[in-house]
Length: 202
Image (cartoon, rainbow, N blue to C red):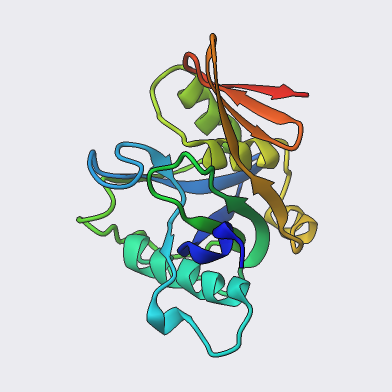
């Protein structure tokens, strides 16, 4: 068993709905404490005992966790989430969790935010969310930033779901450079010496 096998697993749901000219995603702001303090993230959380099944693929447990956490955090019940990506944490991370990301069509229902876990939530285009981060108005963690970047220019929810279904794996490495902290994934680099992070394709 590798070191990465022996860490907690989580599931994240990237909810999509149609909008004029393309799609919108649901992002929510975490409280200024705990994991991802103050950041705008997708609904999600760690796999719990009830999410697991005996002799089952890890991805299925993460999918159930994404569905459950979405219901608990924003009050939406999603069906048929499609796998998008798998994020392996860097060895330097103080809390290491392997996270599966799933795309899902949002139901037509009102948000019901968990007061303990969500400060605010907003439907927004990927482009506008990235613009708010670039302006220093929002904090986005690297997996959220990369996921939004990949959804830019998508014209419909159906197109996004059709393009998913196979998990792209991101194994994160972190390097400290004179310019600041650098996150790398197989030729992609996020430089975080100053906001906004800049995507560099190596």
